Length: 639
Ligand code: MSP
Image (cartoon, rainbow, N blue to C red; front, side, top):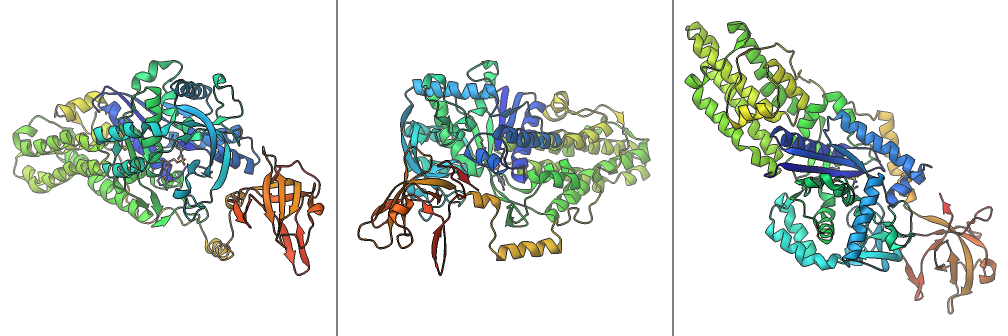
């Protein structure tokens, strides 16, 4: 981080669900980096927020019978509250439903149009609502499923504006080549290069099939389109700085780092840079992608009921202990596992034994021998090698943070604690006192206190309140001048009298979170799994619609099939080939209403495309179509 201005961001979180450990992890890392940047004296801006538009949010709200805005307000507030609990020191919490954001996105769209990077065409392709992403036929798994989340995709054919992504292929490759640490960890870089080398299709950046999104700018004069949610969302990184309006804060651009999870790397390392190139803006310095969290070795999912609720963990074990655990336990970029056992081990061992005990030892020794007085004067005289070792170590670990080697940074930060503990065991203040070498004993206590103070300064961004308590006991405040004095200039504290404080990390003997599932509940879940029950979200993946048959005829040469045109409220009727000729004639069906599965991948029957399936009940006596009891508008949702 060479520049004075530093801009750090988290992803903006979808408001279709409450926060879990994955969200907390990214946000806590970003917070730590922002705090570190402020500590070392940089002018820092830290952004987080919520991503509130798109089909997924519209559907989630609808399923709950809520208006999208009202629903987004509620979930967005739960994120904000959680981040306040987690001591997240954001400078701005952006919501994509903020007016300023919407204006900024429209402005960007206009600029892209003016540059000739946006054109109108018809999109036909496979769409995964859950990932809000289009996929080519080649990318689908088994011709149907989303390669990212495994859910069913639906075929969409609609008018759309396209962004000329293909135009930026070479420029992107060039940029990756010239900026080897643009994508962190570097191991992820090749993945992205391969993806871009495989060829980039132009990207559909507007939609007409739903309404919950940012409208196109007035100049486009096309009110039925809304922006593709990823274009809308990615723009938050600059609209938060006033892009397209009051641009004073744009001095923070380009971002030092966008922190994200590995699943959204492609959006940040391919689409976002291409958008920025089109807008004539600089590219972020780094995009850093972390791995995936599991719980007790298992993928987290709502149906398994094993999603780690960050608030619950923090309430039981302490917010800062949990922050430390997340950043220490897992090498950035790799997948990690949450278990209470691992968390307890970290608290008892790293925090309790190594850090907390050292403070207790200084309080004990200085109280016993020197009435709590701690002095720095003779440290150099007796313990220069220990002090130098610690100063050199702490003066050289900062680059680890910029390479996102966060767990290594903490590992190295702990080494001075070992130096301190070993110095006590080796020089034994009690022996020194017995031998009348009081000055040496005093210098030893001073050495230990100063090592602790120095470690505490660099630990502050990870555990702000805990380190403030330690600093208070050592009579100093953690701020930029303290950083400069103790770390940069390798100085020592002024003389002081230590304050006794209660132990900071009481030992944890047993798991504090009881498995929330009792035996009864567990049994019920197993039974549900046996019955193959699905969740409400899974049910809503099937789009059911009321349709009116506007044309019906027999399929030539087939004893079973009828060829129907069914109006389901779209621009053109859907063609459905139905195997019901034995039970209904074409005339029976004309102008009648049916219920239809509207998001099935089209199939071909006797060479005819079928774009839906009618619902019917069948038993030994025959087949009966399922129809609305009273006529409903064509296209009405069923569910
Ligand atoms: N709204 C988009 C981001 C837009 S940024 C311009 C989004 N939101 S999200 O809420 O679905 O996910 C946000 C972050 O949570 C992502 O970085 C994702 O990687 C992370 N995680 C979601 N589940 C996770 C785990 N199980 N483990 C770790 N992180 C995970 O994507």
